[in-house]
Length: 253
Image (cartoon, rainbow, N blue to C red; front, side, top):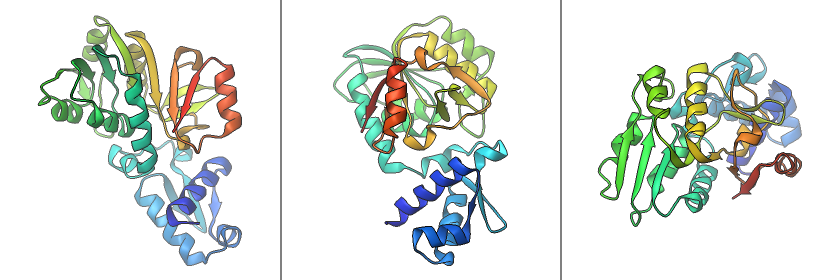
């Protein structure tokens, strides 16, 4: 098992069980306890677990929201594949929304040069990176900028969204489960996400498989309110079937 594969397995177990133990992981994954400690240190630096005596717990158990930079450093290969798959959902022309997030940021970077699009964003870094593209008209949603996610929120943002209509909203999410739908830690960001979805003909969520099965404080969409989920090959087949039965189109890259 490669290092990244082992670390993703450790993270999966932490999220499923609520805690992982160094000695048990070392035995079950056939590596030394020191190797597991290095893995946990790497995962903690990535912002997805917190070390505790003898092991680690996932940050979700702490009610903690990893910063954008931390989230951007994990599942990078999967996020690139998801972003490329999302290009097939672009209209030939028209308007789209790109939500703030580490996977949606990759979609923004991959937007083609050969079509005219109006792109609505709620992240200042995205607006800056896209503004110089000659084929794009970039609209930045105003409001308070959350330091942790660099997303704009609150009334100015919601007022602007209430006055526009786009072809597709490309959304990020912190969690997705069949019980709670699509969730995120912050109510202000959840309100913006709901308005983005309401402003669009179709909503496409970009989320790697580590987001699936997690529930956060604020729900922004039921499963039935989203048209398409684009994830990676790590998505559990049974969960994928459950989502499809609920009416969600699922694409795995």
